[in-house]
Length: 235
Image: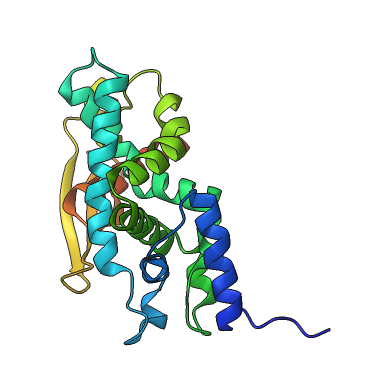
């Protein structure tokens, strides 16, 4: 028996239907979900890529989670809420949810880009785009129901506000009398709509470590996490 071509239209429609069921929403405009799942490699006149929806979904997700955190932790300070929020909108959180709903299997990709289905950057971006599609098709209530349902486990996971990598690295260095860590940008690349920055974290007496991200903040956090891993390995 011949294997079904994963790029056939009927196969893609089946994938969209399955994902819509998982999302818990019947789309009045199914093309929105299709757009949210279209990788740049498969974008054409009929199937526009997910970048525009990703932009909107990032804002929708941020709003919903900010509201949920203020209600869940009414006595916490703004700074602690901000730390929780940063973790919940991070790539790791987006990828966690994307994998839980098997989003990668529903992506529309070109025949030479099957690896995009498991690429963390792609999964995170497409997850934001799907949230935007829910918002545009069903309104804020529909997007809110999905986000609060799928992010509840992550919200409940931290009894205390998380400490970000930069804070933990600073505490580690100061406890050993090494002074404050410094951060130096060593590379900036990528197009304007998808910039990539690489930053090096440095502490006296230790080899530096680098990290990359779409913003200076994200790259610094990645560099701090990398340096923490290295100093921990060194004992």
